[in-house]
Image 1 (spheres, rainbow, N blue to C red):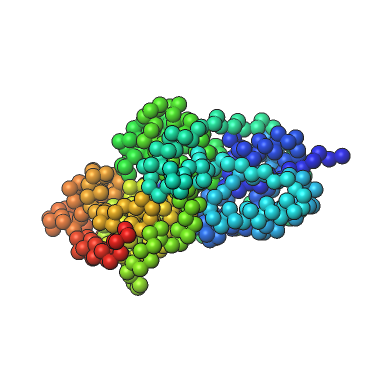
Image 2 (cartoon, rainbow, N blue to C red):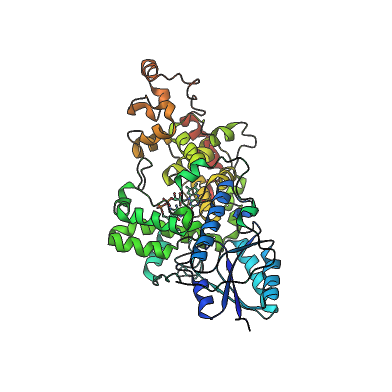
Length: 476
Ligand SMILES: Cc1cc2nc3c(=O)[nH]c(=O)nc-3n(C[C@H](O)[C@H](O)[C@H](O)COP(=O)(O)OP(=O)(O)OC[C@H]3O[C@@H](n4cnc5c(N)ncnc54)[C@H](O)[C@@H]3O)c2cc1C
C-alpha cells in the first residue's frame, strides 16, 4: 500500500528553510509531492516582465536542485491552478494540499476558488503565512480600520508583531511519484529567445543559496551603516535582497532575525524599511482598486499628458540628458534593479516634470525589474506621483540635480552608468549643461552629440506640475 499523499503547491516560496507549508506536509507523515503550476497567474498582472521571467526560470532550477539533494524534486506542470490542482489531487488520490499564502487581490481570489474546489472533492487544504512579517489583516487602527499612514503602522508593527524563530530546512524528503504531464522548467519558455540577460546573470544568483549569500554579505557589515548609506547609490549600502524576498527564496523573518543578531539596535533603520513591504501588502489588501487606480480618488481627474510623443522612450532608454536619471534607467536596463533613491528621482521626473501617467512608469518597471512586485511597485509609483497612501506631498518635486549632488557627491554612480560624462569635474557631473564651454571641451563632450541636452527645463516643468497638481490638490 502506498503512503497517503500531500501535494505541496510551490508558488512564490521557492525555498526549503522557513517554509511552513513544507514542514506541515512532512509533519502529516505523507509522501510530499512538490509541484509548480505555471499559468502566468502568479506573475505581476498576469503579464510577467522579462526580467522576472529570467529570475523565475533560475529560481525554479535552483529549487529543483536543492530538492534533489534531499531525495525529492520539483515537478512543473502548466495550466490554470483552478483546474490542474484538483485534477492532480484526484489523479494522485492526494488527501491533502498545502501552500503558503500570497496576498495580491487577484491571487487571493484565485486561491479561494482553488480551495473551494479541493474541499468539494473532500481534500484537506492547509495554507500558511510565510511571505510577510505580519499578515495584511494583522494590524488595524484604534478605530478598527486599515492604516493609511506609514509611521503609525510601523509603530504598531514594532509593538505587536512577534518574531517566531524561522523553521529549519528538512534534512531529507520522500521521493515523489511522477506527475502526469510534468515538463522540464526549460519548456516553460521563460528565457527570452535573444539572450540579452548577460547583465542579470553577472549580477545575480537566483535561488535560496543566492539569497543567503546576499544576506550574509549585508549583515557582515553594511547593515550597521545602513542608516547613513542607504540613500547613497554610489555605495553598496542596501541589502539587494528585494528579488530574493519577492520570489520567497528567503523570508523577511529570516532576514529580520539575522540583521538583529548582527547589528542589534543598529538594525532598526533597516527593519523600518523592511516593514514598508508589509505596509504595501496591507494597503493592497484593504484598497485592492489601487492596483490600477489612484488611492486618492481626486487624482482620477489629474491632467496627465495624453500624447507624450517620444518622451517616454527617452526616459526608458536613459537618454533624458539628466545624468542621475539616465544612470538609474541604464542601471535598471542592465542589472534589472535600481537603487531606491534613484527610483524616486526617475519616477518623479516621469510623473511630475514630464506629466506622464504613473502607470506607464509602473509598467516599465514591471517589465525590467527583477524584483517587480505589485504591492511595492504600485505603492512606490503612487507615493512618488503624489496620489498614493501616505504619499509625498504634491509640491515635493524631486530635483534630480540636487539629489545627485547630495547622494552621489563625487558622481561615481553617474560615471559608472553614463561613462560618456566621465571626464567632467564633480561640480558639473550632475548638470553638464551648466558647464562652461571650455570645461565641456576639456572633457571631450559636445552636448547634443555625445550626450543629450536635458529634455526638460527642470524649473519650468516644476511650475507646470505645480499648476497641474493645484487642480486636484484639495484631496492631495
Ligand atoms: C517608484 C518605485 C517603484 C518600486 N518598485 C518596487 C518593486 O517593484 N519591488 C520592490 O521590491 N520594491 C520596489 N520599490 C521599493 C524599493 O525601491 C526596493 O524595495 C529597494 O530599492 C530594493 O533594494 P534593497 O533590497 O537593496 O532594499 P533594502 O533597502 O535593503 O531594503 C530591504 C527590503 O525591504 C523592502 N523595502 C525597502 N524599501 C521599500 C519600499 N520603499 N517599499 C517597499 N518595500 C521596501 C524590500 O523588500 C527590500 O528588499 C519601489 C520604489 C519606488 C520609489
